Amino acid sequence: MWDQFQEFVQDNLPLIFHVWGPKVLMAAGLLMVFWVASRLARKTIFTAGDKARLEYPVVRLMAMAARVTLLVAGIVTALGTLGVDVSALVAGLGLTGFALGFAIKDTISNILAGVLLLVYRPFSKKDYVEVKGMEGEVSAIDLRYTTLESNGQTILLPNSLLFTNPITIGKPAEEEK
Image 1 (cartoon, rainbow, N blue to C red):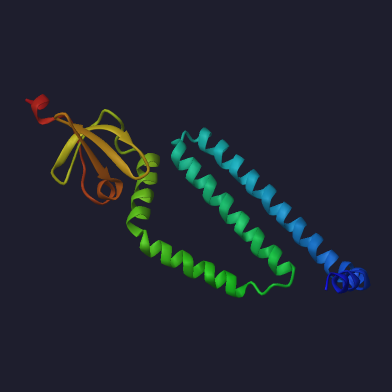
Image 2: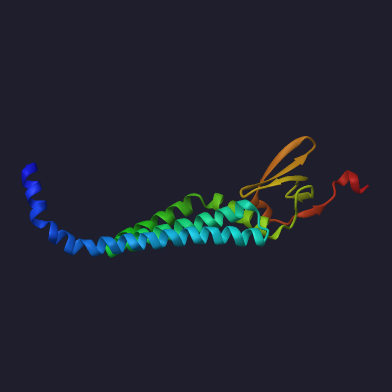
């Protein structure tokens, strides 16, 4: 059996290189172009984020999303160049994205609200905020939660709650008297 395989390869090697060689080289070249583009996009996003003084988690999220998108596009393009029917793959990726988005919609809404809170900065650390009966001094703002400190307690508020409800920003009630 091994001898038959070796004989097949020796007999058909020129044909294999003639037919598949250019396609493989083109696919490899496309992958390299998309990989370089993903690296450049990542660097550009980090540079622009620093200049715009955006919070690091927001910049990192945008850079990772751009890089993954470009790499997936490169893989799909390279497979299409090799002659693989990528329509089912693209449909599968779309369906997977839809299912994941539906399954983690609350997490995604918290992250998107966190990005908007970090970009627009309606309040910052050390501000006193009240939302839906919960109040305290802001001690941290990250992508998913805003942390409040009140009477020795730590309150974690989902960012979507802060983004979709009225917020009172001011001083604690005992300081106002």
